[in-house]
Image (cartoon, rainbow, N blue to C red):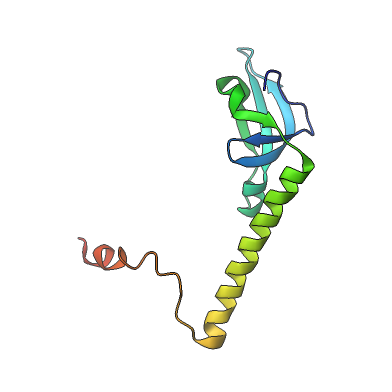
Length: 111
């Protein structure tokens, strides 16, 4: 992206999509963006401050479709996680995701 994004613009920041909420210029003339990303909304985090001039090519314009696709992806993951959470006590079903299991014994034994 050659020029600084504008307030209200949807952007892609590396792997994430977000909306530019504010554009500031600091005392050294650098452009600072305040961006709320889909990822941060689902994590219940505040908007991020990003110095645009550090990596302007890591930020590119995106579309509303891009933003909505990421929202749908997070919603699907959240729904699946909630379904699994609720199904365990109801069905007394052991977890199908034991990805932490190989590390658990080492964590318990380590001093």
